[in-house]
Image (cartoon, rainbow, N blue to C red; front, side, top):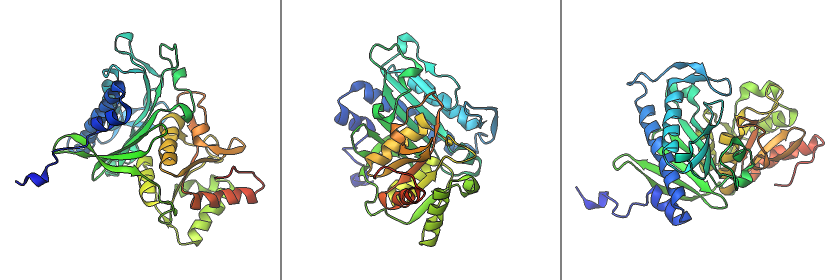
Length: 340
């Protein structure tokens, strides 16, 4: 076998984090997240063989039916993070209350995560993912839920992992670039494969992504915007797994819409482990993450402050070309959206 098939200088996840941060605790944290995601990837790939399809018979913190893989993925994330020695508080979509790490194993980081986003699709073998955001405990705090009840301005790291034909991790540090890593199954390591990911500056492909089953509940500017896209050669692409839809939007361009509406006036997505991390990634990749019309005004998702750990939010994410269409519709409706 040729030596050219092997990389003698593999740019692994741990190596990258150490080079970027020089923070040993952060290296340990990202290693723990990476390890748990490798375990989840293995479970997803063996779901049919291991009889992991179907419901677990319970509901999660937000009232969604839990799948067997939801519960397993949650346990994998919690066990890895608690035993890392660098986490003080954990918030999971699958747990109603925050997890406070015992003092003997507690550290400075607070992590919020959705262990298996899009799991309603798992039984039909559609892409799923993991989403996470990382904060540091407030000065003097022993570690409580309040350490996480902050806006995206205090988030120090955000990322997601997509489980599909390849397993890809995409993350960013506060104020940094967005980077992608692909899991090499031959060595069991995430390898740096997408340096400095950028949203297409011209807006990219003409794609809109929205659950049009909710369209009767949308406000008129959202309805008019989607009709504009339909009349101007846009393709509709909606997977229903946020990680898959956002990953495609970053790479190809277009716009992703999950607005607040008459049915869900607070939005449907969870702020701490869906809205804020995805907004941070989109913005640091050069895109826009707007709330749309929410609670009487239009603002940034990253500026929202959760009032509880499972707070919800709306999201409009994309490039200026497409988000501007919606802002123009709001202006026509007599509202005053901020400049993009």
